Length: 377
Image 1: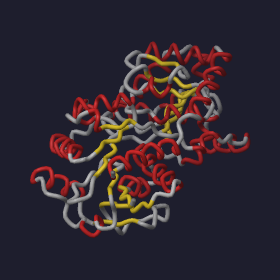
Image 2: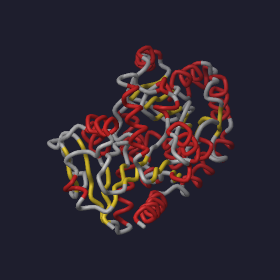
Image 3: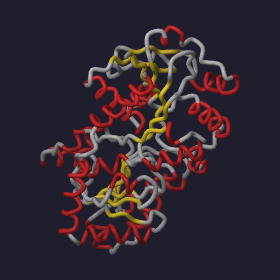
Image 4: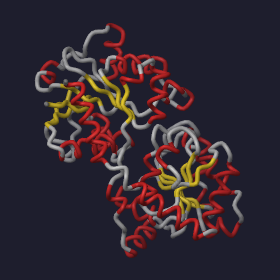
């Protein structure tokens, strides 16, 4: 079976020098499917001159603009143009990254992480929102199967996209094995010195956008007793996305106020020691289709504070302190408990570490291959 595989988001992330959740999923699924012996052929849209040695050599690049093609197919019902040669080399196509083409004869499987743009348009960019959502829903409906990443997302996609649940498969993500590897004390010390911070921070990791709830994390940290704030500063790791210019300014003042630090550009090689030096990961997101940073915190062997809503409880189980993400008081109470109860913190870290081991990319790839075989047959 010859499998076409969408790598547009992976390529775009490499060009930005930062892979988002979709890029991480695409890269790790490709590598794990290859390890299972799958015959993969990549497809990406956009600037073909922008390449990377990390991209798989076996891929086709189409210069045509994906958004224009998707709008054309959504309105006319006709397939994408200039895909004929690529189609002749594959038996099915997996659009891993929301770039779902309409093909002529080849069955298409689409991965949709969540229904946020449709279910919660207030948490998505307003730029051409109506047109993008229309095209997104249409492209999802021309898939033979939808793969999503949690039972919560499966329910949301069925409801908001109008797709029968029996056409949707929930396959959990994996966690990169590098997060399990312990950084040496010297490596941790050098990394902390590089960013002029120290051990014991409360850490948030993620792109800064309204649903990530960073403003409440800052509010919760500010309400902690002064002795805890001093011993456990706030470390926010992530690029600014959109939606809250006042938050950007407040984050920039963290260092000046002595309350913490905002790091916008942290390579993966530095993220691991920063996490492993933390007191806890604080991730009270308002909505997650999965919540991969929770697993990365677990694998880093630190306690995790996260939300009691959406897909987070599926991922976290009983291994995290789950809080009401709408309550800064709840978030602050969890932070204070972890800071003051070393025994509880160690217990949470151990439970999380063991739970993270059950989420592997090998398992994700094996279940994905089963979907390919269903569609092919």
